[in-house]
Image (cartoon, rainbow, N blue to C red; front, side, top):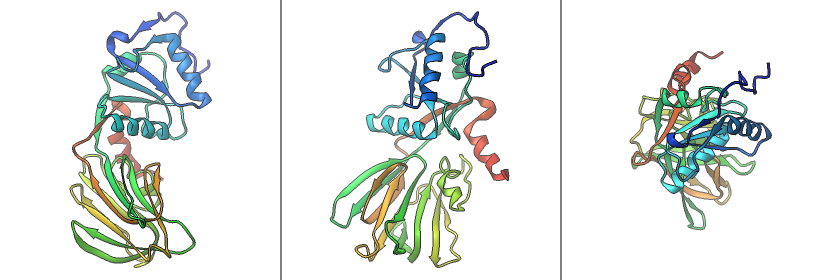
Length: 272
């Protein structure tokens, strides 16, 4: 049987408009094909009328969706369905029982980081990050970065390829690849993780309370340019970057209870 096809041709078409369930998808062929199948099976609410969103795609599309929601101040919960690659932030792809899955879903609330970046020209940019804020060298020159925590210099000079601050939700993404710690979703902590540190070579990072304000000051910024990236949004040639958790804004992700995000993050500690 084709896994992308409905399990039974006898299912009646279901109208989800009265449940306020809307549908959006990425522009990939796989996601577009899945959207077509779902629209044959269900009638969805228009986006303006939707109270809950179903997002078809991968983790990248989920991050794009969450960023757009932050931009417009939306608090609609999102039930992601994986039609991408990894799908860590998504649920398994199934057509049947969609309204029942959403009704019985486990709600996971996540707060974004706020990145305030100032460039060497004095321009200021503020962006949100669901996973992490990362600083990365732009050239062959090693970056030199001073790190302050709650207004006090904690590390006078870190020579490195970069450094990042990750949320618990993002701790299994770039942070884990940089050998940072996995943070349980309920930990109320942030991971501060160096990327290929050269000096001090043995500094492996820090775990900070999530009310900590972190400030990165770029040393020799003209000769050793650094970019700052909030998830997928880059600011080049930064001189200073302030990062904090924005607890006043939160997003709600919905997961099948047997495969919820908090459990996935916890089990990543046992991955081999």
